[in-house]
Length: 95
Image (cartoon, rainbow, N blue to C red):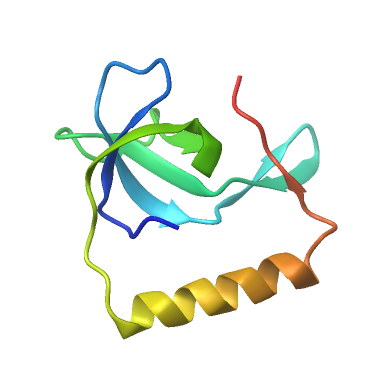
């Protein structure tokens, strides 16, 4: 997974997106679903009315990779474990 703060282009996208978090769970049609990432427009930052949810397969180009250290590695381990244990939460898709 890409670290928080990474800046990417989405496939068929024309503006830069900065990754805000990983594994967000949102409610859609009375069902909890998760995405790999949420992000905001760069350099504008977070606008609560314009949060992007997307997955690894939606990333077209990585422009900048955010900070990574041993805590990042630990997060990856725990997140993988979380996904294995929570298979009842469906992964969202981007249209």
